[in-house]
Image (cartoon, rainbow, N blue to C red; front, side):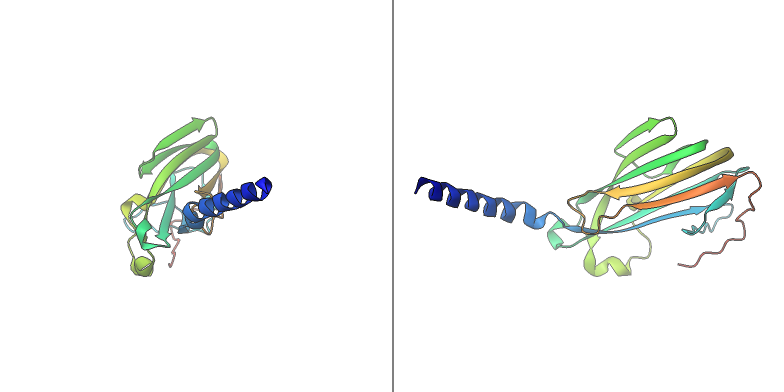
Length: 184
């Protein structure tokens, strides 16, 4: 009889834990984008299909993340976005955006960003993303090499928690992407 009472209490505790915590864990959906450009003009066009750049001039990587709140009470809250950048034979610096912490080792830099969640109803109407949701890196090649950018999110809070990864190579004899036109 005592065992049954303990079992009932245990089940009730599990139900309460589920109700107050696990029920609302996945509360955001994210729309990530990683693009690259040489950015030589005022109307920079970032492309996500670019795979190669010339090593004789800098280029830029742009990370955009829209976090969409699945419930109205989470609008305006912040979602963690992690960038993990592995690079060879180049210098890299964050030129736009604010990070909460950074770790830097030879050939690797990691950042934690916070992205403000927006309303699901208005997500499609937003043309210009919020300034805090865009992060731009300047990459200065020093010869032949590559850069790999991986973007991850809060594991338990994001419904579509699939990391996005993009790799770009820079070669000494690569053609320039000055004439690149990207339509979005």
